[in-house]
Image 1 (cartoon, helix red, strand yellow):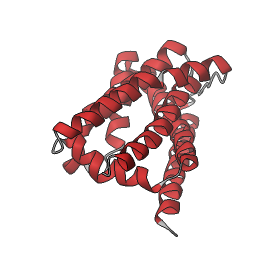
Image 2 (image 1 turned 30 degrees about the vertical axis):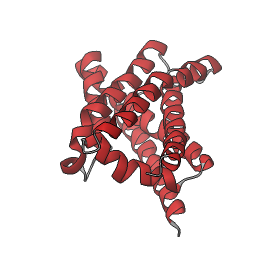
Image 3 (image 1 turned 90 degrees about the horizontal axis):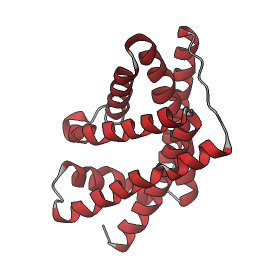
Length: 194
């Protein structure tokens, strides 16, 4: 299997595992995962990716002057090599699968469980920090400094869910962000010969 196919397969399989885990836990605890799969929710979700994309671009630009920052190292060592390997269609699949799998687990099951037990503010904190931590399992020593940034992204996705009362909106934000960011980084990295 070539590198591109391996990346795509790993991304899709891991998101399917998260989706299955989310629904099993939801079933065990009697959590009703509601999507609100409306056109309006999807449009609001897609538009809500814009601030995240702007922030990502600003961070990307900051790595030029600070290449040894944790963001600079993470971009250079992980993100850029992954983005260079995939096509735009692969990026779309990765975006859609990650938007669904991660949002059902973190803004769906975990968030609703924590909100029931501890309240909304605790649910925001727990689901956002867990979302961030999961992205760096096995690499917290090297890239743990990225956890606050990813926690902020998790909180932004939580806010989309909360304001729209729609898991579909949060999934659309996540999917749009991942798709556009992958394509954007791939193009920037090729034009800047990174």
